[in-house]
Length: 159
Length: 77
Image (cartoon, rainbow over all chains, first blue to last red; front, side, top):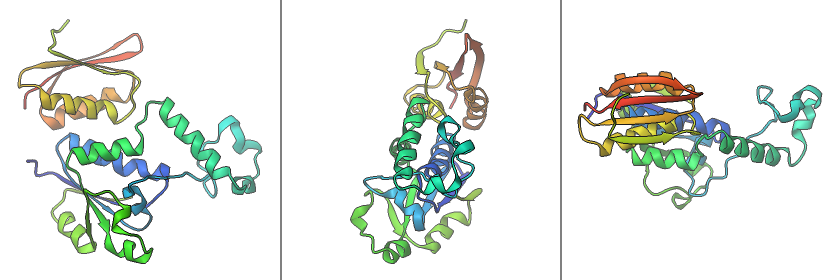
């Protein structure tokens, strides 16, 4: 077993921000790192059994919009009801057409590669989530559990 | 042209899938065997160099063929 270790704190729960933690975790595992992921606050959404991740153009000027919409669309336009759903569908279509993996696929590849996933107990309590909402093969723990893994890890990332 | 024991078609797949598929296949191979990998992701060129270096396997060849990227990788570990 490799002595190189990576830990990642995943703190965001949108479709776009779901990619960096899972891409890095799966790749690190593939090149021989022992990987631990800690999911806290909105990041806990990434561990749901039924993923329903969305991407929002609201307050996100860096997001490329189709047909140069950013050029003529007023900033307030990104707040129109339904915009989030439309942009999420477009993003998912683009992801598929470019051969980028879905989050479901990356997550199961991570689990297959024995990436350790820890859901944050405090977040579950805070938002009245149930343990049942989340996939089975994870641990539930707190900051100390992450520290236990991060303390002797070679790379620690907060995403 | 190198001889190879396995072939992996990773065309149309984007980062990090070609690497992950290669890793999975390598797990089923025996030491000394060679796999030919075909990809279309330009990022795979650097990534397979880095992958080979970090996993202790040997990248025998990395070439571009009509817009595709072909790699031959020898399992050493």
